[in-house]
Amino acid sequence: MASFAAAVRDRLRTLLNIRKPRGHQRRGPRPSVGARIYWEDVRMTVQAGMTVELWGWLQTQGWREVLFKGDRRRYRDIATDWAMQLIDCPPERREEVLAQAIENAVARARPTEGGLANQRATTTGTQPPADG
Image (cartoon, rainbow, N blue to C red; front, side, top):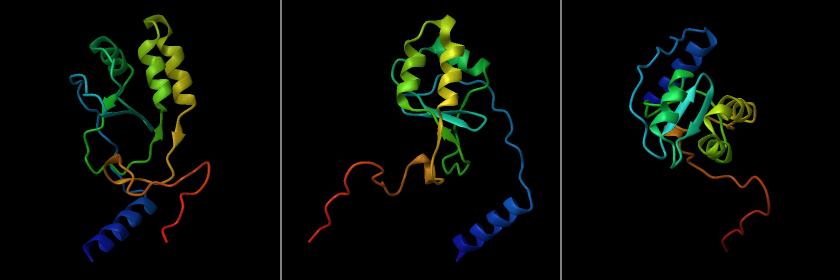
């Protein structure tokens, strides 16, 4: 019953626009591989190969690590391919590659608990066979 009350309260706060803006986090150490980082409404997963220098550059652009376990904010996700292109590109092309990555970011269909989907849906191809 508490979850129902929390869901109603959350929806009411959204409808009445009673939300606290997210405060700015301080700069921190480079996140580990697999961690999520965000800037405004865009999010990406940290990939192997992200250097301390690249992380410092991203922080100057306003990127920070997602530190909230049950983060329910709605993000547009940057594809892994774009994250890898950002890691592999020379420093003079970073702004261009990052802008293209943000432009191609895709909104996820629904908020997920802790950034992990509880159910996986097949979006392309054939449906998996039913048991029985």
